[in-house]
Amino acid sequence: MSFRKHPGAQLKRPFILGLTGSIGMGKSTAAKMFEREGVPIFDADAEVHRLQGPGGALVAAIEARFPGTTGPKGVDRQKLGARVLGNTHELAALESIVHPAVAKAQRKFLMRHRARDVVILDIPLLFEKGGWRKVGAIAVVSAPAWMQTKRVMRRPGMTRAKLKAIRRLQVPDRVKRARADFVIETGHPKSATHRQIRAIASCFRAR
Image (cartoon, rainbow, N blue to C red; front, side):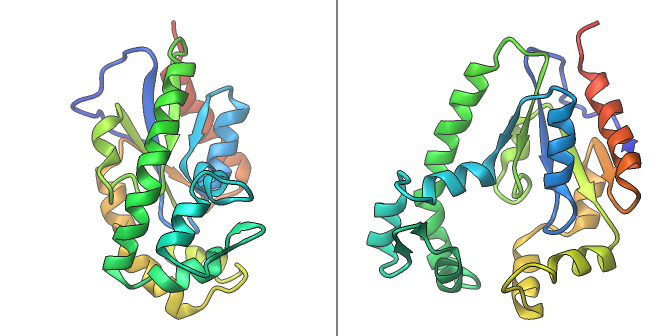
């Protein structure tokens, strides 16, 4: 783990720590470790899954804009991904449906935990969509490129072409590391990663 002082970071309550990282870097694992340390997590991806799942609030709107991409189980992510990946116009249309709903859920989360010392916003596209402006500090989860590729290629339906397209949409890992307040290395045993998480969490606890 490395740390540098964030020029705009001020310890207000709750302190908002942004957690991010490129695909396959181990962000979900890091988030679970923060939860074990008692830090409330707002998981943007999980919220999207909920909104797009069976009976989800966004299913009808997505079906209306992208016919044939939903069913009894909600949004078919494979079909929807095929429609928007690599198509800037279609991706923007999807984001205009999803982002406002996620932002609303995020505001409710912050209100619910307003008495806590620190909370985490787990946002994959924190840099790409400007979310970094709304947090007090940023933790970037990172691993060697070869390890990232190995992890991602294990996912069902993943191809080299799809991974390449996803990487094009994401700020490069080296840039994220340079802009981070904390860099969490996940290329080591999980016990080492957990020690980093514990040290970061301790920075924001009331003394």
